Length: 105
Image (cartoon, rainbow, N blue to C red; front, side, top):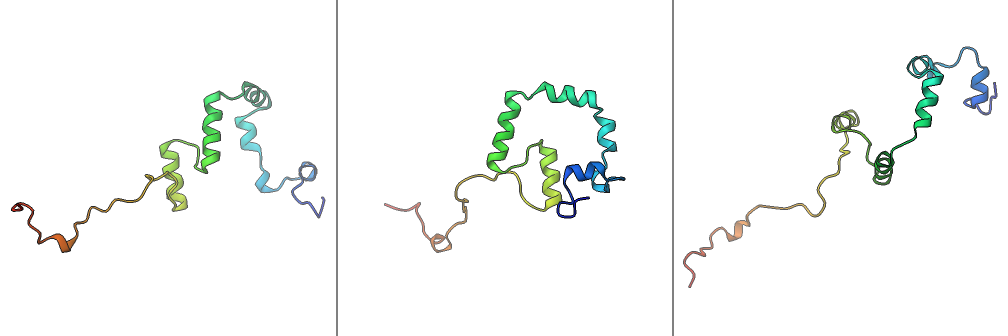
Protein backbone atom coordinates (compact mmCIF):
# COMPACT_ATOMS: atom_id res chain seq x y z
CA UNK A 1 0.00 0.00 0.00
CA UNK A 2 1.01 3.62 -0.37
CA UNK A 3 1.77 4.89 3.14
CA UNK A 4 1.54 8.55 2.13
CA UNK A 5 -1.87 8.08 0.49
CA UNK A 6 -3.79 5.39 2.40
CA UNK A 7 -7.08 6.09 0.58
CA UNK A 8 -5.82 6.22 -3.00
CA UNK A 9 -8.19 4.16 -5.14
CA UNK A 10 -5.40 2.16 -6.80
CA UNK A 11 -4.10 1.17 -3.37
CA UNK A 12 -7.59 0.12 -2.31
CA UNK A 13 -8.11 -2.02 -5.40
CA UNK A 14 -5.10 -4.19 -4.58
CA UNK A 15 -5.82 -4.34 -0.87
CA UNK A 16 -7.18 -7.74 0.23
CA UNK A 17 -9.58 -7.69 2.00
CA UNK A 18 -10.84 -4.15 1.46
CA UNK A 19 -11.23 -1.95 4.52
CA UNK A 20 -14.69 -2.11 6.16
CA UNK A 21 -15.64 1.43 5.10
CA UNK A 22 -15.25 0.37 1.48
CA UNK A 23 -17.48 -2.70 1.66
CA UNK A 24 -19.33 -2.58 -1.66
CA UNK A 25 -21.38 -5.78 -1.44
CA UNK A 26 -24.70 -4.05 -0.69
CA UNK A 27 -24.10 -1.60 -3.54
CA UNK A 28 -23.29 -4.41 -5.98
CA UNK A 29 -26.43 -6.29 -4.96
CA UNK A 30 -28.59 -3.23 -5.59
CA UNK A 31 -26.71 -2.02 -8.67
CA UNK A 32 -25.16 -4.77 -10.79
CA UNK A 33 -22.88 -3.37 -13.50
CA UNK A 34 -25.51 -3.54 -16.26
CA UNK A 35 -28.17 -1.69 -14.17
CA UNK A 36 -25.63 0.92 -13.08
CA UNK A 37 -24.65 1.63 -16.70
CA UNK A 38 -28.30 2.01 -17.73
CA UNK A 39 -28.93 4.34 -14.79
CA UNK A 40 -25.93 6.51 -15.62
CA UNK A 41 -26.90 6.70 -19.29
CA UNK A 42 -30.43 7.89 -18.48
CA UNK A 43 -29.15 11.34 -17.53
CA UNK A 44 -31.04 13.88 -15.46
CA UNK A 45 -34.25 15.76 -16.08
CA UNK A 46 -33.96 19.53 -16.23
CA UNK A 47 -36.22 19.88 -13.18
CA UNK A 48 -33.91 17.59 -11.17
CA UNK A 49 -30.91 19.68 -12.14
CA UNK A 50 -32.75 22.88 -11.24
CA UNK A 51 -33.62 21.51 -7.77
CA UNK A 52 -30.09 20.28 -7.20
CA UNK A 53 -28.64 23.66 -8.18
CA UNK A 54 -31.14 25.51 -5.96
CA UNK A 55 -30.30 23.39 -2.92
CA UNK A 56 -26.58 23.65 -3.62
CA UNK A 57 -26.87 27.42 -3.89
CA UNK A 58 -28.92 27.83 -0.71
CA UNK A 59 -27.13 25.16 1.31
CA UNK A 60 -30.43 23.45 2.09
CA UNK A 61 -30.85 19.66 1.93
CA UNK A 62 -32.47 18.14 -1.14
CA UNK A 63 -35.35 15.85 -0.23
CA UNK A 64 -38.95 15.62 0.81
CA UNK A 65 -40.46 17.07 3.98
CA UNK A 66 -40.13 13.80 5.92
CA UNK A 67 -36.47 13.45 4.92
CA UNK A 68 -35.62 17.03 5.93
CA UNK A 69 -37.54 16.63 9.20
CA UNK A 70 -35.52 13.50 9.99
CA UNK A 71 -32.29 15.37 9.24
CA UNK A 72 -33.41 18.17 11.57
CA UNK A 73 -34.09 15.64 14.33
CA UNK A 74 -30.72 13.95 13.85
CA UNK A 75 -28.66 17.13 13.61
CA UNK A 76 -30.70 19.14 16.15
CA UNK A 77 -30.60 22.06 13.69
CA UNK A 78 -33.24 23.93 11.75
CA UNK A 79 -32.78 23.16 8.05
CA UNK A 80 -35.96 24.55 6.49
CA UNK A 81 -35.95 28.27 5.78
CA UNK A 82 -37.84 30.47 8.20
CA UNK A 83 -39.91 33.47 7.20
CA UNK A 84 -37.87 36.41 6.04
CA UNK A 85 -37.92 39.84 7.57
CA UNK A 86 -38.06 41.14 11.04
CA UNK A 87 -40.12 39.20 13.62
CA UNK A 88 -43.42 40.81 14.55
CA UNK A 89 -44.11 41.82 18.12
CA UNK A 90 -47.83 41.88 18.92
CA UNK A 91 -47.36 42.95 22.51
CA UNK A 92 -49.29 45.96 23.75
CA UNK A 93 -47.27 48.79 25.21
CA UNK A 94 -48.20 48.85 28.92
CA UNK A 95 -47.69 52.64 29.12
CA UNK A 96 -50.61 53.10 26.71
CA UNK A 97 -53.01 50.83 28.57
CA UNK A 98 -54.71 53.70 30.41
CA UNK A 99 -55.41 55.84 27.31
CA UNK A 100 -59.06 56.21 26.40
CA UNK A 101 -59.56 56.88 22.69
CA UNK A 102 -63.32 56.28 22.76
CA UNK A 103 -64.12 59.64 24.30
CA UNK A 104 -61.84 61.83 22.20
CA UNK A 105 -63.26 64.95 20.70
